[in-house]
Image (cartoon, rainbow, N blue to C red; front, side, top):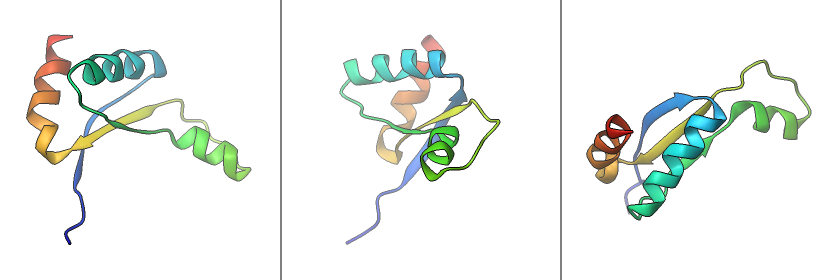
Amino acid sequence: MSTPKFSLVFTGNMMDVLKIVEALEVKDIHPIIKDESESARLAGFGSHSQLQQVWVHEDEYETTKKLIEAL
């Protein structure tokens, strides 16, 4: 069994990430959102970063990049 591979497609603020996630979900693409500041908060640490990352499965990478460019 192989490990799924994901690719980073966007890094930015929460508002831009939410816009991208909504557009992707309409196309039945379900991204992974990585938020280091939230992870740090939950672990009891502080973080200065307010950026989030959008990751998608490598099979959906090209479709996702085209969609983001169109936004």
